Image: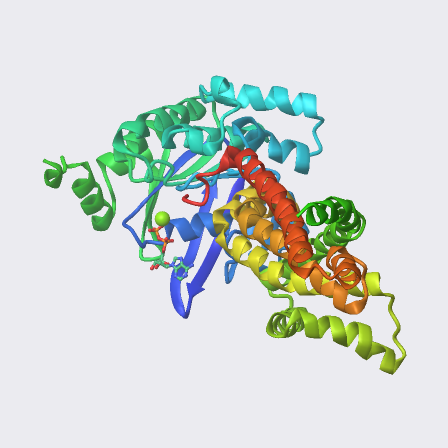
Length: 251
Length: 224
Ligand SMILES: Nc1ncnc2c1ncn2[C@@H]1O[C@H](COP(=O)(O)OP(=O)(O)O)[C@@H](O)[C@H]1O
Ligand SMILES: [Mg+2]
């Protein structure tokens, strides 16, 4: 078990958005969280990387279990040294070029020397196919390229797990493929990933585990093939059915 | 006509010199201090540090809401009444930097607010602290946004330093007044000092343009 959360709760303005989530991720997992909009998927990922402060729950990481809201700033930063996050809106550092985006976490946080950082940064950019674009600023890159730089930034620090929050939702349809194929190659390399996405086909073919969420709860979780072929809950079945049917409104 | 031309040529260096030795240093020192005040004040208000935020709001309120000339008089002619004697030049520096700091604090704060919150979150997620993210990511972007209005403030300040003549700082305007008193050619001499201010502002405007061009390396940014 690499990372486990137990009974995670979170409310916004008195409305409970996460109603006691239990979730565990093993090393090498490519787990996909599916669920309708508003289910609490983003909030869950954000709580798991402390971008939101959960109201309650426990987190186990590196064999240590801690009440989630008792984690000190230092403990959170220490934890984040081992995780990475890829945002729906990329959030590349707008004042830094692609390479600097990727090396920032190395030079500033991990005190890697400039030469090593550059080498690692170029390796990471190369892994997402953007070594040629190292000097470009975010606004000089397409959305798909920006997201790939964001993935390179996540990779550069050699995290134990990467969280993805709908990494392709902000992209034009023709640009999603390049991002998904980078993610697919990471999964093949055994990178541990927890991915929120609406790309059902990607989920079906790349993930080894599906977590289906609705209304702040995990409705069903299980091995990908099993969930797709024999969903145990009606809600899961209905969701998969709607989302795998050819979309009529797009004609 | 010849006499006027001669007076012009003769007085030009006499006005320009205090411009170089007084007006420019006064502006440079005051504006640098104002920037420090502005950035610190803006960050405190931005993160809403309790008590300090209220103090800064009060400071900005007072310094933006009263005339610069009054502020100069209070510090230079008023404070000695309570035993605080400050020489003309430092008095001017204090007033100009506090006054400009109040205006620029608002400019910088607004620019900070305009940086998308995702920039902070991305910084945190690569392991950076608040201060690291502020210094390396957010503040540089905010200063890019704030650069044009701050440049305008600087240009205004060059001109406003003429008010320091009122507290006996022998800057350009004071120097001009003295020559007028001697020669009684107010029209020529005041136009002349105006021309020199114009030259100073123009040079700054040109520098501003070049600066903006340089900084535009990562512009188009505020959109995302
Ligand atoms: N910062 C916030 N403030 C208030 N409500 C929020 C906030 N973030 C999310 N919510 C609410 O929490 C619920 C779950 O949101 P979210 O986690 O974004 O769902 P999902 O990612 O599954 O679409 C929604 O009802 C949303 O309106
Ligand atoms: Mg979401």
